[in-house]
Image (cartoon, rainbow, N blue to C red; front, side, top):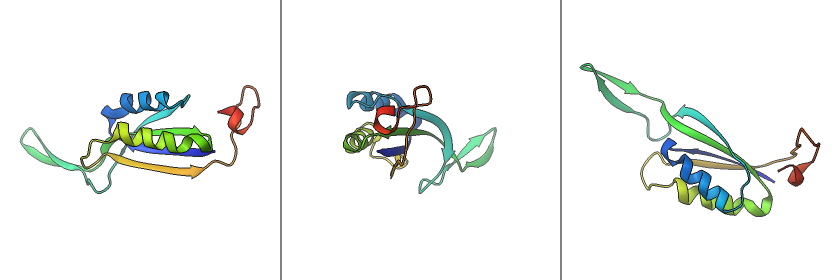
Length: 112
């Protein structure tokens, strides 16, 4: 099993959700986050005063999938979230040791 975490632009959330549903991903967790990478924020003007916005709004998506679905989910996120411009985000993938469905006690792939 794999855990996939993606940091994407907020306006791409619906596209990514639909793309993941199309490849058979049953559920996702989405969180509003702020951060920066190479983009390093930008400068804005407010009432004549210039100020720097260091942390940019992003969405963090977390998806747990079986090993055989990981590549399809990764591709779906890349295709749906990509704009070709700076700040599109990143995707992180790591192994999941154990998954338990609290209600039934099902384990691992059955719990997904």
